[in-house]
View: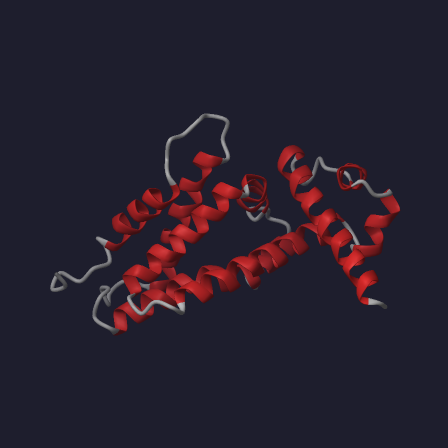
Length: 203
C-alpha cells in the first residue's frame, strides 16, 4: 500500500470516528445507527464495516484512541514536573481543558463509560484505568516524599479526584452558560483536594 493510500485510509478512519463521536453525543450510543454515522462521515453504510466490526467496536475505538492521546499527552507534561502537588494540578488542567475543547467527546466519555455492558466493564479495567491510575501514581510519590498523608489510600483518592473532575467538567457539556475558566477551575479542584491530602507538618 502506497503512503498516499495509507494516508487516505487513515483519514477516512479518523473521519468515521469523529462522526461517531458527534452522533453518539447527540443521540446516545443505543439510539445511534450505523447509517447515522455514515451520513455524518459522508461515506456509504458499508464503508463503516471496512474499518469497524460493529457499533461497539467504534465506541471502544473512540475510547482507545482518544484516551490514548490523553495518556500520552498528560504523561509527557507530568514527566517534566517533580512536585507531586503540581503534577495533580497539571492532570486536572489537562483533563478539564480537553473536556472544555471537545464537548462531544466529553459527553460520550461521561455517559457511555458508565454503561453496565460487559465490554465497557472490561474496557474500564484496561486502558481507561491506565489513565486514572496516573493520579494514584502521583499520590504514592507524594506519600513517599512526605508531602501527602500516608493514611490515605491511593486507590480511593484517585477515584475521588477523578470523580470531582468528571463532575465539574459537566459545566461545559450542559446547555446553561458558565463563566468557569479552565485553569482557575483546575486550580480550585486541585487545591480543595490537596488540602485534605497534605500532612499537617507540611507548611
